[in-house]
Length: 581
Image: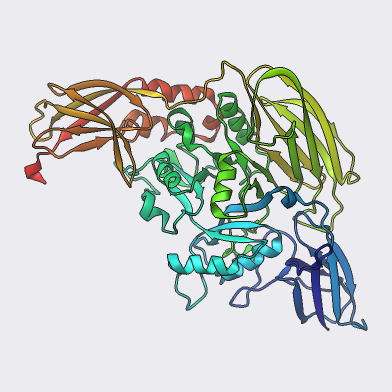
């Protein structure tokens, strides 16, 4: 039987991109197809995606179609049968909550169009069409951008054009990369203010380290460049252990604890949702950093790949499953997303929607601590289940968490509570932070807000830890000590900014510098040499960072090990004569 489905927003009457899931007795799975006609078997129910107007042939059997636009619309189901008089059905979907009306927009900054397996024939236009139908408002796509046979990989200008064509008033398509991505961790980056390849601008890294190799830039040195260009990069799947080399596990956010110590300014937010949802270790790590005075918001990414087939490789990609809501103060644009994330105006979710404020100020706001009572208001909405949007769901639990401990908890039965509005009075005369956690009745439905902060008079913001360096400067050929100048520099791929210069004599210098900086030795007649107290310190780079395991990311003792090593850094500068260049 041939049928046409027209789907519109019930309030605006505008066409609404949706996912359509057909099911019935004897009905085989019906999936959307890639450019080569293969089923797009992602995580969740069999489904096709449409822009609000779909027409096609269906089995001549009675069936039900579930029509959904996650997570803010009520899923509808309609019956179809071969003997229907009408071939065209118009469906109006009701919006059960509208965080967008208050500036909140949902998306993901870590979705690969083509990760590399290329099991499916995917390109950027197809990926953006699926994303819109899944219900997100923005998406940053990365990796390669086509696996369609005969299509050339688009360059910078073409990717920018394709994203502009896919963007609408309700959806912003962007491209960037999983960057930095190497031995020190995997991060999700946002677009540069002026489109360019991120590696060309901020530097490449080394993914797998063989003996004697080291990546040329620390992650915070690349982030320094990204900040300069209106972008940022956020650690993803921080506690993942996958691959690597003997004694040096891969995929883990190896540098994240170091950044907390020497470059706290680089930790704008962290993806806490990829891999295990509600992972206690991830949350313990986050709570530890917040209790140390860091102001770090939450993001929820998927690290999903449009080119991987669940049937072939068993990945079952969670396309647009986890979502980061960002409150933007300007019309939706790339830099507004970056500004909102860096300001901590976010919450992460796998379904439930949660909006909080304390006396009118939401996540990211900083109050001066005082005994004055303030009112925490919580509004939470249940959401359709990603795995089965027709399932009846509700809010099952709401927690207020203060400084890592549950301050208040409400529990609700079954799927009865579609929306809850709660209040709690807080009077905070100490340094503290508050987040709200909401659980839905379906498995793994979780939302967590970024903190609202209270700052007492004794609060001290984390600053780069001061390293003490003992430098030996010698002739590389003769090992004779040299006289010259040592500069403390802020180093990255784009520039080397001199912050301080000091003399040294007889090949020795002991100095102190923030751990996010480097040293440049200058000797007349010799080539300059720049060394890092991190990358060029074997104890820190090879031993402490190299041997990190997932539990170390939530362990204060590991941070203490880093600080102790930074107290005694030995660097050797074997200077090469200019004549040898």
